[in-house]
Length: 259
Image (cartoon, rainbow, N blue to C red; front, side, top):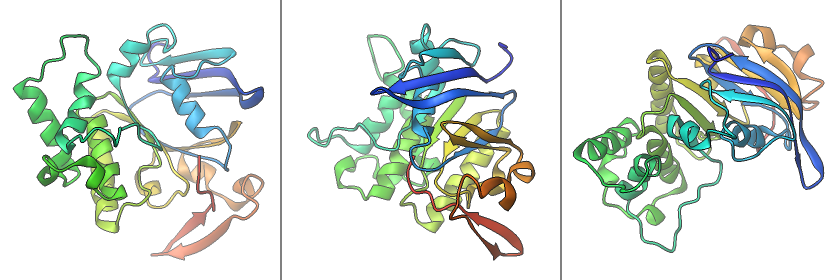
């Protein structure tokens, strides 16, 4: 069990007296990129928060990097980078981009949280990955939505995480930023990192995905793209499923926009 990067067994979560996750189980056994999709209300964001130990299931077992996130939450969050669908950066405090990215390093430490030269270099390097290093002194609140998303991704990368959880990070990114992020994710995977990314559509991320997990409160499908991507398997989950041809390959348009 400890060899698995992520181990989830028979996990059920209830929020406001409603079952959000029902007997969910899957394993990620090696560094890879897993795309998590599912209809609106399927529990995708809830699953990410459960892996982080933020939401506790009423039954089941969870291990992340060999740790129990409900007993070792601080250790887990020091090893995991997380970009939520909605950020928690306060717009009342005039934070600059560099300060936001440095949070990714400092919040994973105990006091005193002193900034070192290595921290500054890690933060700048993370911004450079997203082509945002020239925004170091810019006010975060004055950036466009797409630029803010890139800064938050850099914040998650600055701590050099072993596992990266990304919740709809491609939303509002222009084509160039999407291509840059795809190249970055590919590089991180080749470097031995594991990435779980929630997306409302499979394109453009499908080209570098190792596995696809289709969630609808429980696991409907989980496997390599060629095992999951078929109209017969996806149509019961996505009644409005459409397929189109793009550059000689079949693209599955799920029509889902939210986690």
